[in-house]
Image (tube, rainbow over all chains, first blue to last red; front, side, top):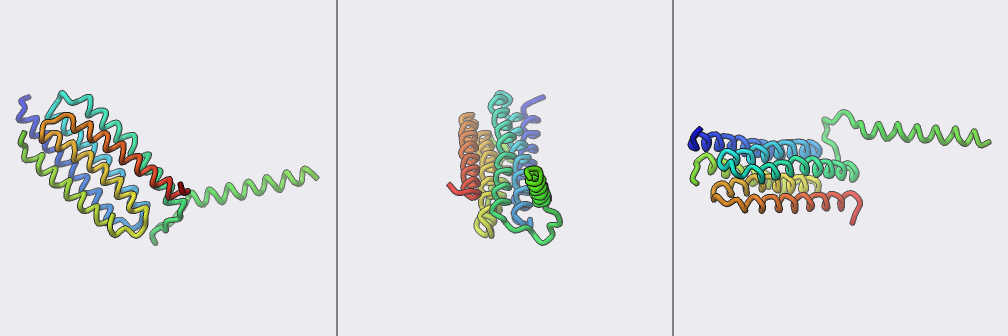
Amino acid sequence: MDQELLNTIGGIVAVLGSGVLLISSLGLIRMPDAYNRIQVGTKASTMGTILSVASLFFFYPGWIGKLIVLVLFVLITNPVSSHVIARAAYHIKVPFSDRTVIDQLKEKKEQDDRRALGRKVRTNKGGE
Amino acid sequence: MDNILLEIAIGITLLSMVMSMYRFIKGPHKVDRIITLDVLTVSSIALISFIAALLDKMIYLDVALVYGILGFLGVIIVAKYLEKGL
């Protein structure tokens, strides 16, 4: 394959990656509440950045080592940061949107509380 | 090297960063601003990589890596601060 064709392929992949980044910022504007924005922002921007960085391989095949390090870095750290943001948002009680129908974490916590209460009552009876 | 597709990609990335700034300015809650900071950092990694390809300088990839580490640490620290204080 000659370099001209590789350059064209790399350019197309680069435009695809930046298009995914554009979609992520569009979702950041359109989505109704903070949790949906976390979802759309981090997922789409991970995909867009990986495509953008991978497109450089077609221009300069000698840069493969550093590009792999960059892709792995983005792939590892982005889910971590999105998880930390979502956890902080839940704990400081950021409001849900009107169309949210289920909150499984709250149900789980109530279930655990009820179970712990039952265990305490039973141990008290055993002590008497 | 001059590649018209690469320049178009840089333009689209810049446009997406400007569109994200809308949520950074308006965002009704603090959390929205942190999310936008995260998205802007990750977009900047892509932008710096494009510039490295355009200028044919491999050292810019190191700049992108360090910028990513700093942005990641900033997001983690601000989220922890929001959750339970310093």
